[in-house]
Length: 232
Image (tube, helix red, strand yellow):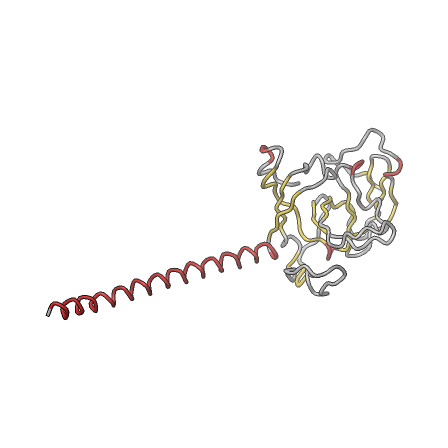
């Protein structure tokens, strides 16, 4: 009789134990599902909407400092096919990172992240290197750099952001040259310490190579006061 009672009590506990086990696995599955969704959303944001970059050099001083971390709006000029994989050197899918829809053009003064094609003169391969400079010349404009002055269509432009040594070295001179259609000309703000359109064998960057517009400094290694600085 006692054995039967113990067996009955044991059986009566089984459903609740099974329910507890089932509940644990359901919660685990729900947790893992949430993690997967978060990771997918984070990847989508990174490849399609906004991406973080670190400033490694002083070519954009004083606007951007070495050690600044910036966010770049990848939807500034259009919607792209996301580039999600890093292929072996020399191999790329032609449609990756290309515009599906381009609804805006860079304007003078924009600070943009871009890549440039291989340079046959300097033998530099920067096709996969993210560079950051300021847009100066727009399609159809004639650009000339003379000393510390920049002329657009013969007119001197005001550049409060630019840094030069007094007088400007003559090797900084450029042009005059006309910016081709669907291309831009870019200069660093630290003009005497920037490799930019003045020195490239092809000084013009196709707009399709522009990844986005710098928006904000979200972190800085050497100056916390720069956190939250709007890039302009």
